[in-house]
Length: 235
Image (cartoon, rainbow, N blue to C red; front, side, top):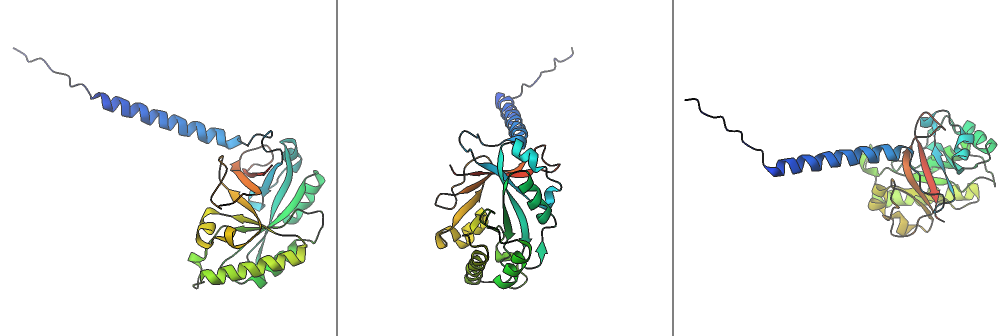
């Protein structure tokens, strides 16, 4: 007599786990798709704009304005030698589109302030109509070719801030990454307006209020083939 085959049922927890994983994947996919074009409500943040550089290629600043943008921050210089290849053209195009424009310098903690300020002033004009200059602080000195102490980074940064403010006649805005702030506590050390970065949710890592917030670091729009950094102002 043939034996009956018995079918072993899978435990219910396996089905529950599969359902949870499916829900998590669905949620992650929705979040990724939604973030591609997401921007904070204009009712909450009426002043919005973009931050762009040569990585974004040709930017349609008229389209930025049509999307509700009122200003554009443009990469200008990096360290002591590099300049953003599109800064001059972006500045002229942003002004033609009726956007207020400002310049961004990416600070290199591995080198001194003098060479960096010289690089900045050779590309950024002294213009009373421009927005306050921004110093982007996104890399620490951990990967410098030669060891640089925290005290040295802080000293050169303070010197650089003073040099740029003297040239521009305006107080700088400090664009702080979480890593840089955690390492050097710049928000506590320097009384300057802050620009913080966190996708979708307002950032709190500086310990005090911010002026500018990069709410979507990679927003896809009709303004450029590449995503742009979408920025809002504290109301």
